[in-house]
Amino acid sequence: MGSADYARDRKRARIGRVDREWSPQWRRDPTEYLGTDMWRRIWNAPVQDAHLPFAYTPYQVRHTHASWLIDKGWT
Image (cartoon, rainbow, N blue to C red; front, side, top):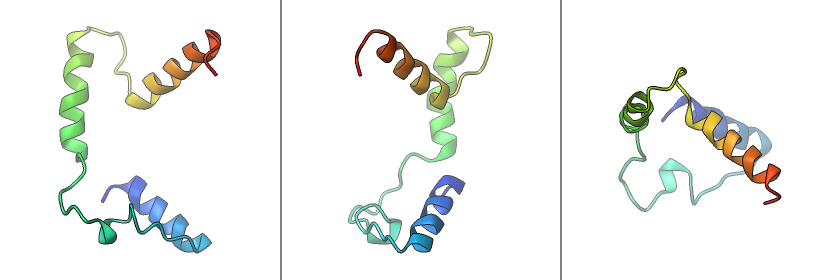
């Protein structure tokens, strides 16, 4: 479980909401989601191949793409 999952679970417990469908202990499929190390390998290879001046994160790319869609009128 990553830090984001831990924080999300703590918030859900604090507000009294338990999302059993996505909670790790209630999953029907026992396999793991992509771990941080695997995700970094998948993400960093194309970023390095593109010779970008900055190591962009998926978060930054997602928001850039959303901004472009809004600029084009795709709201």
